[in-house]
Length: 330
Image: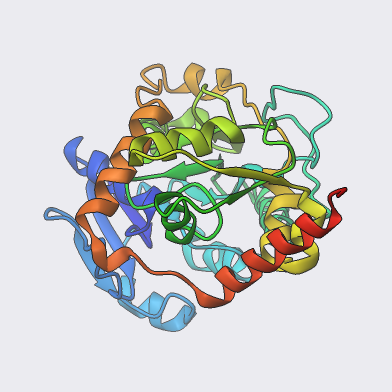
């Protein structure tokens, strides 16, 4: 197969690049060439272009035709419309990376399937993804544009800590300081290793059963946020001194953090992966988060240059802890 990845150097996409190449796919990456942390692996052809410049991208691609095109970095309807215009008649499949946060929030039914309604009144990111999906569904119905929609949930690799603030939270754990867990910490969450995700994703490329359809690709393991914090702390050799703070209070002091909580992480999300397993029979997850947490802790030990803390986030963190402490009865 001849496949084009737009992007391809991110946390989710990099594992899919490696697996695609190992399976003999003729892979081209189209990006700006600005990722130093995840350079393109040997075997992938790289074309550098300004991805938001339609004509520059058209010139860079010439008259090439692809069996599949994947856009890893499309976030708005304008991005998707540009791709429809650019790849109409030039690809046998167009894959859009949406988000499981597009599902009805909070969900009325668990586990979540692909037939769940798409509605998220809390997070603009999710509403934009829904609008992108609507555009592709309309193009498929109107003209047969060969769209496939993929909805990842929280997908990680060794470089990505699972909580807002990243290393700032791990640093607090290592120093024995309190860390904020939203709500009472019992809501369920799904974390998927990027190498597991890649198996399901690459199996969709060039797959005629995927055209005109949507698939979620997640782990079958569901953990409470208390468990997630404790697993990271255990992997780091410390104890998590958890303080449970209402998500609404967090949002009042840090709206950006709060939007991701109220629009996603504060609600239990458990997924039914029957559909992807039916279309990609070899898909199954083999990396539990307990093992993934060890990978993360080991990576941060080996990369002191990644030990960065945003002073603004740290200051907001302390204000939230102080406000919550004042709200507790004496």
